[in-house]
Image (tube, rainbow, N blue to C red; front, top):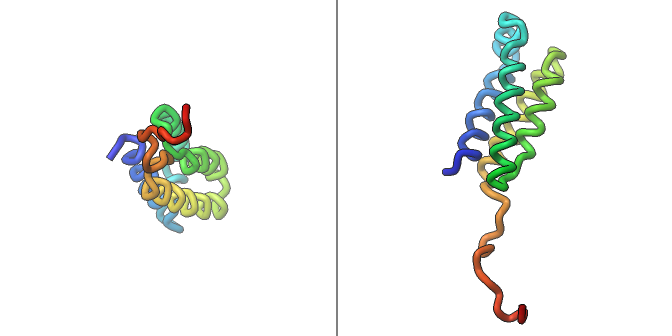
Length: 110
């Protein structure tokens, strides 16, 4: 398992936790929206690592948007849940590399 996939699973779990209807909102409000700022930085780090490793980064971009929109109570909760699902699916799908990318096709003549 590469580091980008592991970070997607971790950020997905954290987003799922923040998406719990009353508990996630209470934690965000009690800590003066600190978890949203932390998650923004964490998604940014995950995004950079995914770009460097040439992995899918849809969930990380959605996570950045969620960290900004998360200030709105109900919409933020829905966005956290959606982002968690996208991150988990992103991690489960693996890399965007094709299966036999390393094989040279000698029939093309190049």
